[in-house]
Length: 262
Image (cartoon, rainbow, N blue to C red):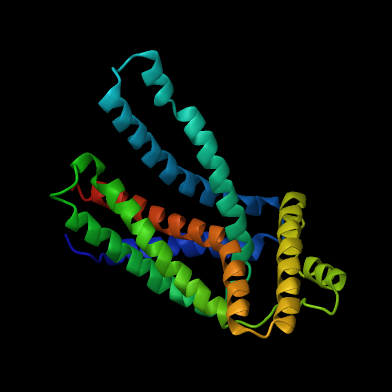
C-alpha cells in the first residue's frame, strides 16, 4: 500500500477548504451558513462515537453475555452520542470563530499539513497491518494519527500565533477594547452573531489583560507563560480542526478503497 494517493489528498483538501472558506465568506450573510459548523460537528462526532462504541463492545464481549440488560445498557449509543455531539459542538464553535482570522500563510501550511496527515495515516495502516485485528485496523490507525498530528498542528498554530501582531481592536481601556472587538465582528444571523460576540468578548478581555501584564512584567519567562496560557485557550479549536481533518482523510480512504474494490 502506497502512502500517497493524489485523489485522496486533493479530495481531502477540497472538502476541508470548501467547508472553511464557505463559512468564512458566508457567516455574515445569514443562518444558512450554520450548515458549515453542523457539518464539522457531525464529522467530528462520528469519529468519537465510532471509537467509543467499538471500545464499549470490546468491553462487553470480554465481561458480559450478549443479550443481557447490562450488556444492552453498556452498548446503547444514545448517551455516548449525546456526550460526544455536545463535545463536538464546542469544538466546532471555537473552530468557526478562530477560522475567521486564518490568513493565507495558515491555509498554505494547512495544505501541507493535510498531505502529511494522509501520509501518516497510510503509514500506520501499513505498519499495523499484521499487528492489529483487521476489524479495528483503520480506526486504530486513525486514532494514532490524531494524536501525532494534533501536536504537529498545534506547533504550526503556536508558531504563527507567536509571530503575529496584536489585534487592531486593542485600546487604552478594557471597555473600549471590548466595544471595538465586538464591533469588528457581526452576522445577520442572530445565533451566529451572539456566539461570535461572546467569544470575541472573552478573547478581547484576555488580550487586554495580557497586554497590561506584559507591560508590568519584565521577566521574559513570566511573559512566555502568559502567551502559552492564551494558546491553550485556543487549543480546543486546534484539536477540533485536527480531528476534523483526520476524519475526512479516514472517510475518503474508506470510500475510495470501497470504490476500488479493495
